[in-house]
View (cartoon, rainbow, N blue to C red):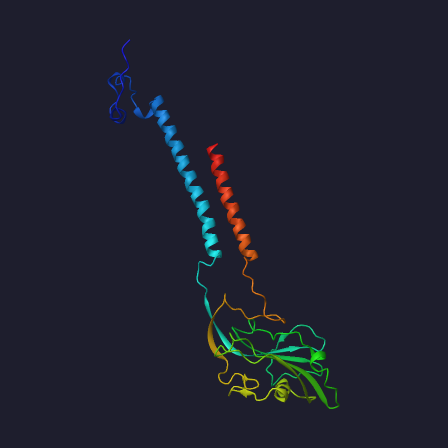
Length: 272
C-alpha cells in the first residue's frame, strides 16, 4: 500500500493533488465536496453563527445602558423663560381648593364669605403658577369680623413667596391673612387695597407690588430650570424634599436588569 501523502494548504487552495486530476469531473462547480471541504464549511457556519449571536447580545446590552443614561439625566436640563409676578387666586365660601382667576383683581367681584389669594413667585405661565400656601379659609380669617348691612366680608390671603422667588433672593415678608370689609359691589382689587396698602400697578394695570413688596420690578422675565423648579403647587406648605430614587427611576432600573437577563438567557440557549 502506498502511504497517503499530505497536501499543503496551497494545494487545497490551488491545483488539487496529481492523483485526483484525472478523476476531476467535467464541471468542477458540480463536484462533490470532500470531507475536508464539508468540515471547513460547517466550521465557518458555526463561526458566523457565533459572531451574529455576539452582535445581537451586544445590541441587547447597549440598549439598557442608553436607557439608564437618559434616566439619570445624561442630557442637560433645558432652560425655560419665566416671569416674577403676583398671581391672583379665588376660593368659594364653601371651601375647596384654589382656582387661578381668569379675571384681574380690578374686574373680579367676590361675594360675601369668599376668599381671595395672592402669591408672589416665578412662574412660566398660568398652568405653572404657584398657589398661596396654607389652609386658611373664610371662617378662620374673618371669625372676629361681624357681618354688617350694606357691606361684604372677603378673606384675603397674602403669600409673599420664598427667597428663591425674591428679586434679590432675600427672605420676603411672612405670609399673612386679612379680613376686608368692603362695599357690596367692591372688586377684589378694592378688597386688597383695604387691607394691604400700598399697592403698585404699572401702566398696563398689572399688579406689581402688594404692601410695598417688591420695591421695584413688575412681571420681570427670568430664566429658570424646568427640572429644578422647586416652588410648591399645592395648598399646603413646601413639599418635603426626597433625596431617594423616584418610582420612575426604580422601574427603569428593573427594566435594565430584565433586559440584561433576557440577553444572557438567549445567548446561552443558542450555545446549547
